[in-house]
Image 1 (tube, rainbow, N blue to C red):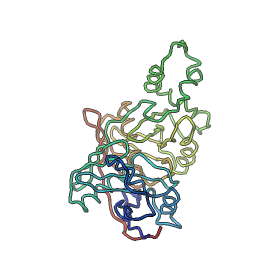
Image 2: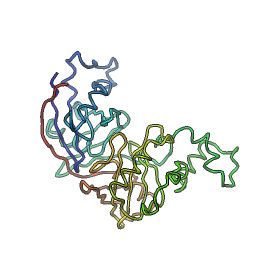
Image 3: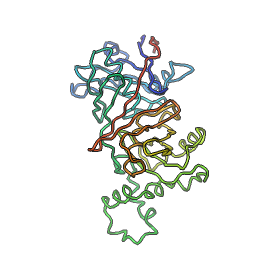
Image 4: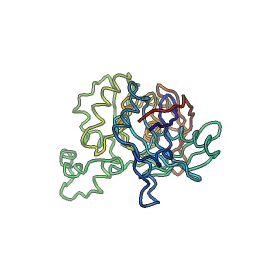
Length: 327
C-alpha cells in the first residue's frame, strides 16, 4: 500500500510523521483494539522491519525517528519508533513537530499529546511549548536493573553501612542522593574514560524517558560523545538502555550538550536530552536560573522550570517535505 507522510524537523532532529488513520482500512495492518480505551494499540500498526526501512537514509525516507499519530478531539495520540525498530516513550523535538502538525490539521493551539505512559500539554504560538512534567531522579524510574539490589555490596563495599540492614528504599536514596552512586554503580570509571574528556560526575534522570547526564569540564568533541555514548548506553545496569548526554555548564543559565540517543545514535539535537540536562543541572544547583538555554549542534532550545518543578521546552518545528512511499 502507499503510505502518505510528512517529513518534519526540530533543530535538525528529523522525523517521518505518519497518520494512523490511513492504515485502519488495510488488511496489512492490525485492526483497532478490542478495548476502545487502549487507543495506542491501534497506533502500533507497523512492523519492526518496516520501521527500520522507512528510517533508513539510503533505502527508505530517512529520519531520526518515525512517529505514528492519531488526531482525536482535543488530543493527539502518538507512538515513537527508533531507526533500530525499537519504540521510545517520548521524543521532545518530535513533540514540537506534532504541535505544529496538529495546529495546522485541527486548528488547535492548545491540546494534549498522549503517549503510552504520559500526557504532555502543548501550546502553539510563535514558538511551540511542550510541558514535559516533573523529572524523576529515582533509580526505578530511570530503568535501573533489579540487579542493583542484589549487587549492592559491590556498590557500597567500602562504606561502613551494615549491608544486611539495607532496604530497597535505602538503595534508592543512596543512588538518588549520591553524585557518585550512579557513577560508580554503572562502572563508568571501568570503561577507561580518558581524563581529557573531563567527566566529573553523573546524574540519572527520567523526563518521560531515561537519561544519563555526564557533566564535563568542557564540551566534548562530537566523535568522543558518539564513541563513549555508544559504549555506555547499552550497559546491562539499565534494563531498557539509556540516552547518554555529555553536558558542559557554560554559565548560570547556559548548557552545551552532546547526546547519544538510545536506538538512534548521535543526532543534531535531542529535546528530551536538553530537558534532562537542564533538570539535572538545576536540581544539583549547577545553574542559578530556572530559565536555561541548552545548545546542541542543531541549535538552541529554551528550557524553563516552574516553582513546582515542572519542566517546559520551547522552540521551533518545521516541515521539510511531504510524500508517499510503498510499504
